[in-house]
Length: 121
Image (cartoon, rainbow, N blue to C red; front, side, top):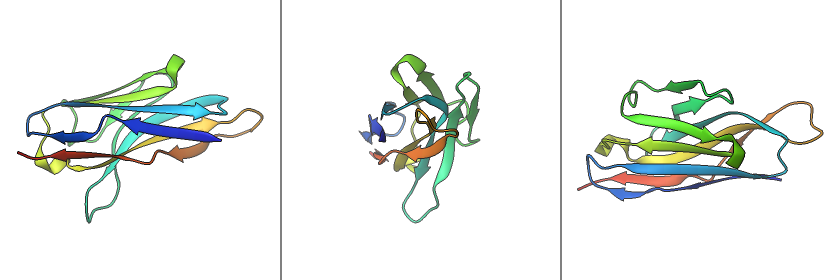
């Protein structure tokens, strides 16, 4: 069993900040790329940011320069520091990771349950 558990969402005023965390646990052999996606009401899920196991990052244009993704490989955890929040950032934020379980020859994609971020005054 592998689980991704997100935390850190909440209600914040425009211009505010949050730090999202996502910890992977369970039967883990290795973790490849990790990332964050979001889904706003009535919209498709979209990529926010990803980070490879080597630390290479990639961001959606809408968050580039405002947000920072990072990971702690020792803790199997990925973070998303989100700053300068706007009402249009309101969404459910999902963690994603490619994880290879012990004795498996290939990695699989896993998703967390999501954490709500609401930006409102």
